Image (cartoon, rainbow, N blue to C red; front, top):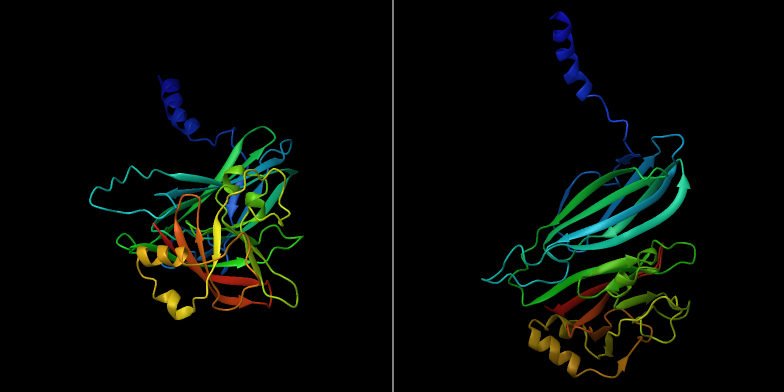
Length: 309
């Protein structure tokens, strides 16, 4: 009887022991720069920086893969929340931010990314896999609070960075409808992400300004795996900043595109307040204005974008 009592006392303790099947240890690094907790954002396309660190749990099973996924709920594209809106209808859009293979005992990765431009939730999931196919993961959520459901068109400002031959993490690629700025490693071999890109930023020469091109531009040296190339139309305009700010309805935005010419696959070197009209393959029409050009540090360009829903 006493033996049975001892066994009954021991059973719950055994059930609480750590599992021997645990995978890599994964942590989010905390600092004044790095975000480790869920965020509530108020600025569309705000910059969020995280640093994730992982170490192998089993000495015989090094880390072999890091996969970072983004889940957008509802969808990252502009959505009309009308009287018939069904919160289940938009679903969740998942994008692969990084899928990297390596063999390491530990691994650290810093992610500097632009948050969503539409109201809603985005979840960043960091999953490490080891040689035994065991996994460890962390995630972080960012919710953008924005009163955009009644807006007649979508608007945001976004910063694009000049590409660099040794740094594939610069955000030089832009999906105009979503307002998502993407680094090269996100689009280099990922066909789904390539299919989102409308605009690519090039710094230009020392004597000229930056250039903006579509993936369909024949002068681009994109990978042969980038097929098909998204055929967004660009049209040059003579609009100034005041005229751009006056485009406050979908009708005016569409008319501005219709009245612009010529249609090009790349702009000439742009200057401050240059305004370019565009139309995506889904017939979403808009314009962007060059709001700032930064030539110090990492060369970058700030665009103010308006696009029909």
